Image 1 (cartoon, rainbow, N blue to C red):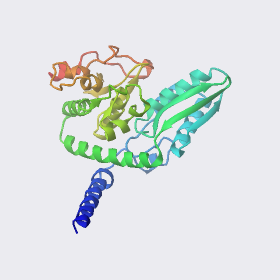
Image 2 (cartoon, rainbow, N blue to C red):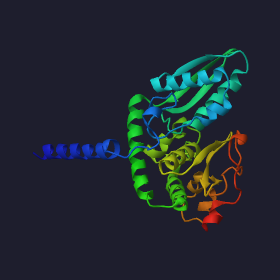
Image 3 (cartoon, helix red, strand yellow):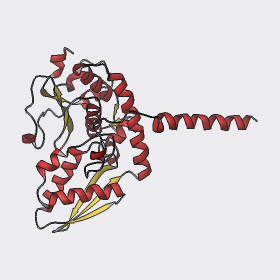
Image 4 (spheres, one colour):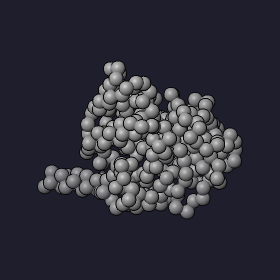
Length: 286
């Protein structure tokens, strides 16, 4: 009898966990409609991408290769071979950067590595399997639902501070800084730990879902965001705050104005709006 009760208890706990974290009804991203779901840009309901960087960085056949790579990863393919007449490495990097900046919601895509064979590049992916992707997406949807409810009546400033504190309140993965598995929003939302890429992508997804405009920004060593406040864009780098063990440290809010690498301008700087150099930390009085 006791064994049966214990088994029933475990089953109920499991059932509650699955419903609460994966299958509880939630409010979807209002920007994602049926027209978008039927477009080639659609990955999932977490985020609506205008593929701004693909449109402005890629040229000619690069766009076709980009779409092929996205399609292959969605299908669970682990390798794509692309043929190019010249500058294969440059073409691959442009596609990789565009994909990274356009689709923070693409949690199945963890990272990629490429081997150059002259006029052919073999691209290998580190990706989540379909079950991990499905459950991870459901988990993130439910976390976003909580965030949307908590920020519903906040103004712009309050929302930006909320996102900064929420994201920077997660653990920075100092042990596996260069691991492929902690570079996405998946690691941030499901494991509670990540590095700069995961923090920036999570911030980007959250901002869109609560009605704040923002961009993803990257250079060779780091990733962060530009966030809009009262019609102007500012540096937003939650990784700065996450680097402090004590969240009450006097420098916790420094990421509202500077990045951890000391550079506020990343790749493709001509594609971004002008950035206001005044730190949001000062504007907000933090």
